[in-house]
Length: 416
Ligand SMILES: *Cc1c(COP(=O)(O)O)cnc(C)c1O
Image 1 (cartoon, rainbow, N blue to C red):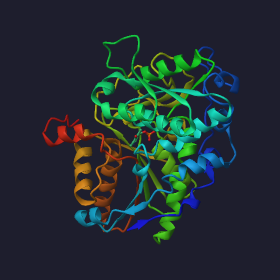
Image 2: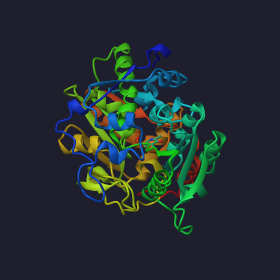
Image 3: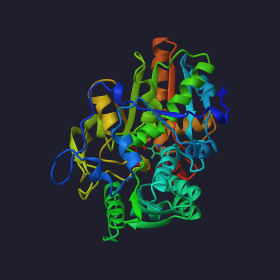
């Protein structure tokens, strides 16, 4: 029921989906001139190696040895068959999940945090700034910079800073410094967009600092493809030819992309993005150029967006509260290679409890969106009497999200 690989089987090259996309990616535009940005425009914020990856058309990109050494602390992650959930559902479908919750920070996010910190370090940048919502990305980057002996400054959405003290404590334990955002408006609850503005402003103003983004960008999704590459190998070990459907929750698109992108060339594999009904970027947003942040400091990205001034309601899946989406994910949805579904919070927590009470593990609220969709696929397979192979990304555990579970169990959770 569980397929593991030895530590020397962490993929040694990342899968670049760019040559496999249904249409070429549209370039990011400079926020002032609206001309395509070049490497020099991005150099104040990112190391050259990451800028090159952002624009690369090479089908495979080597993972540096020192990055592999750190990834091997928890990778390859297990592929698990959710047999007890299948039995509870009475479905003929076979449900598999890739368990990214086993990383030190408890999610998939360290896969890119380690790579990003490494490239900055080798290019002589000792300090990184970033934003964090619920604290998942901030803790991943704090972990990565700690292991590489770098400094880390995290701007945390003020509402979460108050509500999620344990993620802040994790970041501080790894040596990061954490400040509530927006820094210039102490009465504001904040948003991911405003925290990005704070982090970009900090990095742009200091020679010793770069900025690091935990999702959305091409190089972030690239680093996450170790997930799907391992999963392919493990599914083969489990005797499966290929999955029928691959599912991931989608905030900016990194855990979904990490699992799904290596399956893009495989015809017949249905790729599904799952988002919250209260922040329905792919299902109800418009496809357009928009800023990645609230203040309009970042390049304009071609993506599905709810508008950079959209402030999503404060649902518990903080990692899915983003107004935009990765250009790669947007491209796949726009051209019909991936589809998107949205679920209200109440249905998501119902699925989270069913998972916890059958498989045992308590999922992050973000992850529970993917679980909801996997359960609904399995129920559809049951109705149709069809054997179907379902693969989803177990992007993180929910052990620091117990307030959300308490609210749900006590009937205080807004079901929308
Ligand atoms: C951040 C996060 C997400 C959403 O971000 P993506 O970039 O869309 O993957 C999903 N699950 C978990 C556990 C997260 O921490």
